[in-house]
Length: 265
Image 1: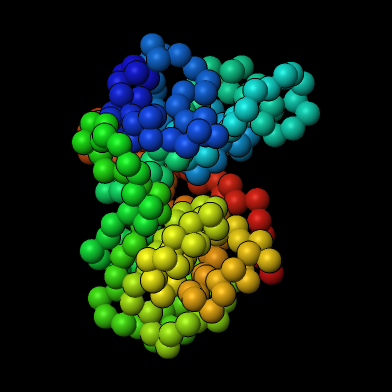
Image 2: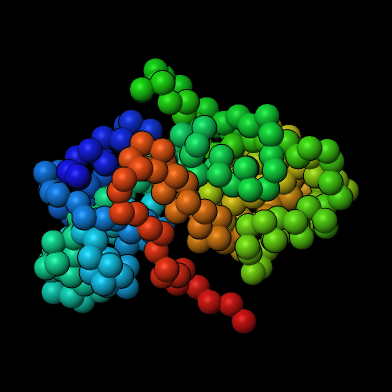
């Protein structure tokens, strides 16, 4: 199978035009005409994931996060980005990233996967994107959904912790005793806090809030920071399922490498 066939399927679901201006989704290493022996799906493309692909005899890594966001001036192996790229090129392994373009797909996107796991329904974009749709894919940033019924806030957080397989939740004081209307944004979502407040959500589930940003909840919403890796870890399953739906006779597996750089005691 040619790499281009896989790329076309992924970009039909998550058009590159949907990615944010700072992003670098798409083919990062390799050539579209490559014959693909198999693919590893991972949240991050790291040296360990490249080693895993080599051991499996696969020559494609599909990662959520791009290994390269901006131009590289040298390849001397001074950091993990350079070392990963060098190892991939030496071993003829392609690297493809499907990042904020997949974040910004409303149905069957990153945030929809979170909503599905925690049992939200009646979902819609937290911040809809204006303009024409591409390939009929609804787009927007973040997601709003509703729990089946109002849930006492401590029970909601315990349930969230279990369903998202989270070690720690950093949260602000709740505004209400129950949670019903929920905003979510996988990865770094603090820029959407005011939108979640404006939409009168009870809680905003996301990651990467800084200390002083927690004050911005301002007794108007509860922030629940579950961690960047934790919020997006099930994106691996999402990408795998998207490919299997279209290409069933293809060697494909989720990485066994935990790429989260953060450890917990």
